[in-house]
Length: 429
Image (cartoon, rainbow, N blue to C red):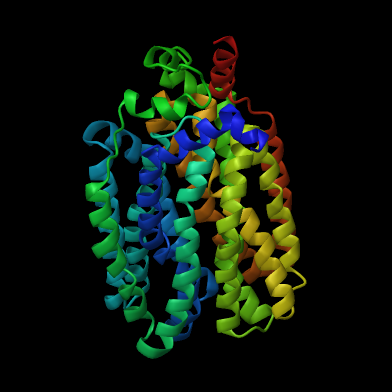
């Protein structure tokens, strides 16, 4: 018999696979596919509304800015307190309803303000969906939080693969209004029912089998003992909190700027057909599936410094975009971008829990997600403004590469306080 089967590793593997938290991960995958995947096709709408209404690229992409700013306000000021007050499940379901209504409202868009109003509704829902699902999965895991969230987030990758291709085929047949409204059906009829039946509040006894993978003979008392004992005021005034928040804002801004402009860049600057550009975007999400597994494992092992190192891949993605001239170079860009983006959508729960622990997750994770969303809101429109003023993407791409380097330096100095306490307690057990 192989040596690894005679050790405690086999027991740990069996315990891990039988753990009910993986059912929560499976539920999150399905919800993410519809509720987060559908709005990811937003870049396909920009050329359509520009052609129909005569709007500029800045006006067209501002919907993403308003959507994201709405999500940022929700995340920083509303979602955390709302989850504490009424519970995780009602917030999750309400978020999906708002998003589905926002997608459906594209049927009646006839002006710029109405176009932005649809983005506002989608922003209310999408921000809360990703935050509540991350909280949902993170509540079930202590040892494998990075891997669990990485697996859960593959739902976004599957959605990112499927929906751009679906939308690119539906738009020529039915128009952009009906195409995007049709994307709401999966949210209404799949994601919302799954959320209603999900078990979102595991007790201490439920998570002990998974916690035992990192702390032998773990019990509720031991888990409580390693929690940080500080006030929310202390959390929000620490240098560490603001380093994470600002690094998150910068990296998210660059990440989403690349995504939101990739279709326009590949079609207008590189001269690729829309279906080829959409295929490259879908391939990015395909690569992201495997990247999420890898990133989750890296983050579980190396914690915040693993996140910092992974963020550097955004610089490579930016530089790979510039020489795109045909399908092969577009494919190379898609691979690098897929690896970078696939890993960075997993980092929020890991950083939040490794630094501050489960006691502060309801408040800290939404706030970091809010900074992520603010970056997502400002990055694309800043790049669009630079493009409109300079007539080229090159200055913006070089500027954004420098911002990524700053974000990496910030994260490198952050200590995972809760993770350190947890490991110290495990060694002393």
